[in-house]
Length: 169
Image (cartoon, rainbow, N blue to C red):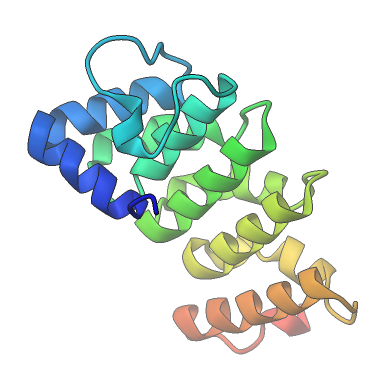
């Protein structure tokens, strides 16, 4: 059985140091070459897979290690052509509370891929301000997974912002 990504990335940090792992992960996320430096297998990857996976692994690294220098690459990754990268970057934004990503997350709430939309809705509820609630409110009264996610995200946003009126707007 393959080790969990947190274990693999921990090994990478032990071997290369935090700064190098953050720098290389950011390079991978922005389309840099996996050749040289950091062994992508330590990020959970396989050098023989499709190139978009390098960007996914770069983004996923930031679920386990963090440095504010990674904010811009993560926000940029929200516009990646491949949905897996967009989804992972939305998850990182949520975990790392990258509020500057709000406009991109609102845009992703309309992504053609459901997994990306769900990740964006969750992030909006957890890190964005009330002016980003429109995608959550748009699903009010709807049925299905996304509507349930949006309703829960709206409740979290209202609680976090100490406002109980967002659903009334």
